[in-house]
Image (cartoon, rainbow, N blue to C red; front, top):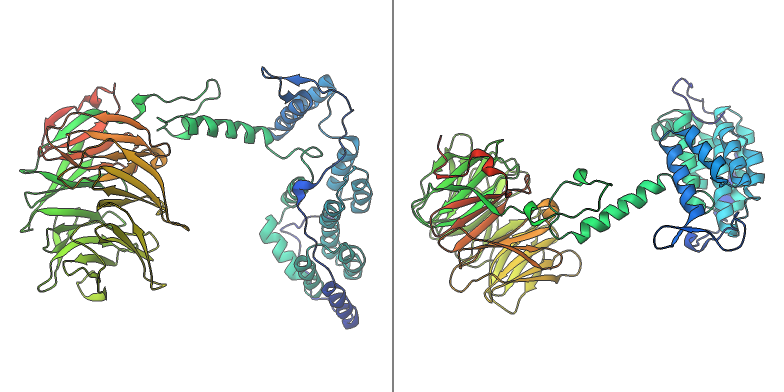
Length: 575
């Protein structure tokens, strides 16, 4: 009886009188769908009336509910005897007599008796009673099919399930199982793992979700409440930059400033001129930096967080403006000032291809998510798509980009994002052939796309950063102020645990860090002796930040008090 076991043989196709099936389909077609908000459902409380005893320092926790939730948690954790003892000692049963009887009957697969008990629980919502009855009768129906009692199953469907007028689609599906019972068995095996225990567990879970919490306390309710409390504490912590696994229930959670990378661990000196751009690889194992000296340097991040020089890439005839990593981090694109785009092998440092277009300089570049194509902004304000061998696949003419090297492509490859006017960013949907604009009142100098592709961080000429939501209604959701930008191109980034922070360079030689949601300026990091042009937060290490400066150096920032892991030094990263 009940669930389906792996050893159960497939049921054969059984012929049912055609007239009966036609009548059944006719009856199903007349069912009127029932809709109602279960949130409005009420059940008569099994508790005695009168003032309830309260517990807790604020006196807002009902003792009876509190004890029941603890009891439920004990049973869920497998402490059956302890749970039973708590019920006995407190005098507060987990379930009313009627609910306890119903659960016992469900475990014993006594469907007729459980239907009678269901009506004794005291549910005041008729629709809820019908839906709970549907669940019980569905189980009865499946058991009859398993026993190959087709006529009894048909009778249950026609005379008990159909009159409930609940879930027309599901009723039609059950009717199809009468025609082909083996299909029913196969579906139950795939959905319930073919075990009675799993089948009953799934059914009990559905019943719990349907009935009011006052009647049947949801599974793991205590764990859910504790997780909610931890979420509130985390959201209130502006310095939160640790893994959730580091939470403790013994004390309230509160991170300090020391969780933000603010201490110089290394100063990297390999460039001979201003460092304009830098970016960590997706896997956090590499850092690439671009300079006015026409070179790109690839750095390797060791397990000890020591950053070492791996390759110096030469070949550009102009300063290198931007860098972008391939999706698998095995290759790198570099773009010179109105020059060419070069593709490099990260492991060997070899230049694999040079992308150029006669008479038109390239000013920006990006990878497509599959790594099989690149996109580039052109000096003539068009955007071109190339395959890896340099064949031009598509080209969007017109005012599609400016002489600014920022470009982004969403992870699904559907949208290309570029600055198309001084105060506008283009969101180009390749598939829908549709364009949308982000328009600012100030001149846009650069932008950065969030890891989840839902937000754009936009740098403005007036020394502000705007955070735009680009899903659904496009709108500004946060502002960040404090950094200095009067003459140079300054870049910013998302970073930290779940990208909860915003970091930016500044012309006053400092790095600025804000809390993303509140816009509060948290820290300014001093150390550089020239304008900080670009920052990049390691996507795999929330405690590692890099900054590039006109002083020709790159600073690696980490947590204070680590003694730099023995590696705090000036140098070129060569060992």
